[in-house]
Image 1 (cartoon, rainbow, N blue to C red):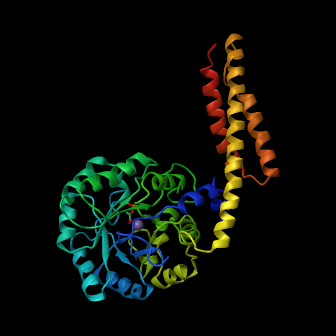
Image 2 (cartoon, rainbow, N blue to C red; image 1 turned 180 degrees about the horizontal axis):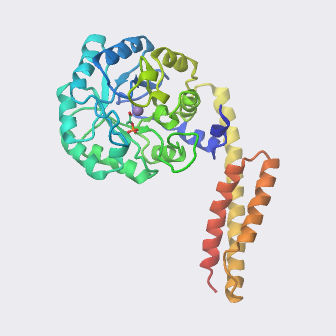
Image 3 (cartoon, rainbow, N blue to C red; image 1 turned 120 degrees about the vertical axis):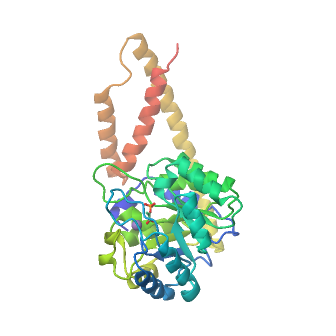
Length: 376
Ligand code: PEP
Ligand code: MN
């Protein structure tokens, strides 16, 4: 696994939570015999021939849903913004002639209407729409009384409440089968990702909405072909329910997102090399071992909590003294010293710098708040 993935904070914690959550079985998005729900197809439906050729080549890839954007949200004007309504009939051909279920993005009531008229099987709400409650509500209103599965992508900005809010609006419209699609979040500045995954956000979504299946759109997280497999595997390690991957019969010539699309053959090879993870096991020895280790972890967690409580008490004491001697709460030199020392000590103990700095920042924030609020 790539180091940028294994370095992320609290991995074992993430795995622990996600391994224990069951998605209700009455949804088309759930795993089938431990195999994730698979969505593949081009970023955009560009021509009837491209759609049909890609779908035919994907038939032997055992996918559950064929994706293609009919209306494409593009950042700048002048880019290819989808073939539009005419492409819906191409998706209808995929369904009727090739036998694959289809899905496309809808961003307005009009688009919902047209997609339904063309028997699209599943709708998805794109990241830009999810970021806008007006758009989500318009779509939700158009879905009142309609029985169709809907996928809700995360909003472009790393705002969990907005993502949850979008899902709730669709739930309130009466839609029963809803999946959340994690496609990463916009960032400013350098990143190896096109959209930062911020894995802690989908993990928290899962904690808050355990019955909503979670699908990883690794194509839009990566923005390239080389990292697709490792990000997909990471999502499966976190017990995601499915994967959505952009697949094009001639990726280099794609009119949108050429750099991240792969051929159906490459898709099959990538999926074939993934290791699917089980939610649980009936291996009694393993379960016994897990219980024992977890009991030790629980004990250590308690110890850490007790130590943190003691540490905060000391902070409060210092806070009082600082208050009486009129010394400022924040002393940057001291904070730097704590951080640098901890990073060194952490390194010696096999704890990553990222983890130490996340952990200590939280401790320091709390400590400052305690000092500032210290009362006689
Ligand atoms: C897409 O899936 O092609 C797409 C436009 O995605 P997003 O809304 O995640 O940018
Ligand atoms: Mn795309």
